[in-house]
Each structure stands twice: as C-alpha cells, then as structure tokens.
Image (cartoon, rainbow, N blue to C red; front, top):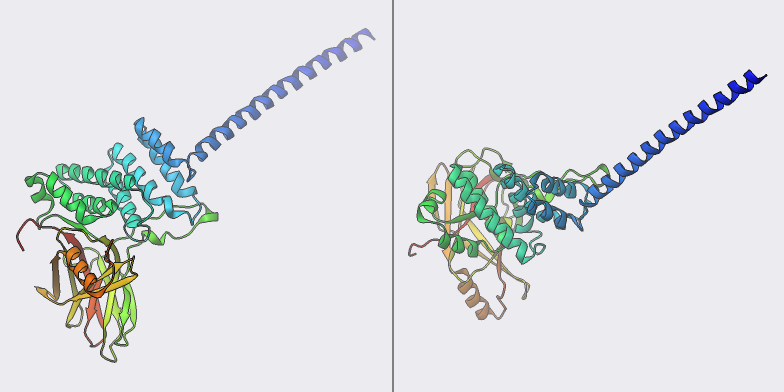
Length: 380
C-alpha cells in the first residue's frame, strides 16, 4: 500500500513539473510574440502618412540611409491610395537616402518622380522649404553626376531639380550664376536648360491589395486636344520609346483628317510661372505626312480666370521632317502689357499648356521630342 501511495505522489510531482515547464514555455512564447507584435506595430507606425517624415529625417540625420529608404518605401506602400498628396515628399526623402547609400541612379529616378508630382497636378502640395530642399539636392546630385562623367543623368537631375523648385526660370538663373563655366559647358552644350517633360513613365508605389490602384500621376503626360474646330478626332496619344530624333523616347499622337477650317490645337500640360527676366521655350516636332504646323503657348492668369493662347509659326527645319521652334521672350513684360491693354490682372501668370497648331489637311501622326525651357547670356 505504501509503495502505491509513494508512486502516486511521485507521479503527481512529475506531472506538475511538466505542467509548469509547459506553462513557462507558453508564457515565453506569448511574451516573445507580444514583443514581436509591438516592434512590428512601432515599425509600421513609422510608415504612417502623418509621421513618416519625422522618422525618415531622423534616420537620415543618423546616417542610417537604409532605414530612411525603408520608411519612405513603407509610407508609399501602406498609405491609403487616394492620399497621394504626400508622395512627392516620400520620393524626395527616399532619393536622399539612396544618394546616401551611393546609389545615384535610383536617387535620380525618385527625384524625377517628385518632379512629376510637384510639377503640374500637385503643384500646390509642397511647401516652400520642401521645394528649396529638392532644388538644392537635385543640383548637388547633378554636379556629382557631372564629375562621374554621366552627363545625360546630370542633365536629368538638373531638370528634375528645376521642376521641383517651382520656378524653372528662376532656378536656371540661380544655377547659371553658381556653376563654373567649364562645368556649364559640359552640362549644357546649348546653354542652361530644363526639360519640362521627361518622356517616360515612373513606377508607382506598390500598395497593399486593399488600396491597389494605378499611379497615373507618375505616367508621362500624353498630348490632349486643347481646341478642335477642324473636325479632327484624336485617335491615339502615347509615348514612342524610340521615336525621338536621337532614337530615344518622345511623345506621339495621331489625328483624323480635317473636315473644315479653324483652329486645331493639341498640347501637353505644364506649370511654368512667368519670371521677370527673359527665358526661352524650345520645342522640336515632326509630322508623318508633310504639313504646315506651328506651336502655341497657353498662358493662364488665375486671378482673372483668363486663358491667353499665343501661336508661333516661325520654326526652323532640321532635316528628316523635324522642325524646331525657339521662342525667347520677356514673357512677363509681354503678358503684363497685354493684360493691361485688355483690362485683366496678369499677377502670378503661368504657362499652362504647350503644344502644336495644325493646319487643315489629311490624317496625320506627330512626334514631339523636346519641350525645354532655357536661358542665355547671349544678346538676342
């Protein structure tokens, strides 16, 4: 009898030890999981559209560039799809992180994405300080790319910085005064210039499935019908990956035949504030069927809700069907005088559209491979 009791007691002790061990293991596992969840929540919270900037800047200031890039990528991926007002800043900060990791080309691509967002549709989103930050960063990136010998990438960086600045003409005057003559001649063989449109698409943020959508604002802008009195129809507008004069990407659009006389204007949207110093706009285009065509600039004055399209027809033949239109003006003074003459306010005027003017004729296809803003020190 005593042996039986002893065995039972011993078995009970072993059973309780086993239960206590299992309980300890379960408790440790639960605590470990809780710590993991808490750490994950803290990490994900840094991607919030409300706090990601602070987290990313703290990482940048600590030279933790990989973390800064990860925070910006997380903010782009997890943000609600319609909250694209912060995208431009997320791309800019990620560009700075990538540059810190000595990855200049990914940094350039993200800077160009910021320029695409801040240059037209979301022009009013960035603060003045954010625009200054982007312009400074882009100019410095461009100069480093010049030093490395990648001149095309350097030009793209300078262009993106000029667009991000909010005033490409003012930016060019500033850079022209800063940059040494030897570097300028390498960077800009035809003088300081900014590409108003880069004819390529940029990759949109990868959202979670519940917020997935196509980031159309990062796609290259197509030419659209601005006014059509000739009865034409815009049949296609796209990017031609090899259609430019030098074999690179450009814009292309196709129209049906005209059925009557009148205006036929097709354009791409831009946002170029007028500046109280002269600057030029250079446009290069060709048509599939030989035809007379010109260009136009549409000036917009928001205070007066006034549009003022101005056509220009004095183009120069370059061969192979290409024509170049070089419009260098003191646009600010010209538009101010015109506004005073016609009784409206020209304050804060911009160039809002740039495009082609078509003469009546057959169905046709057009290519546009240059939309540049430039300045020059030479007398005009």
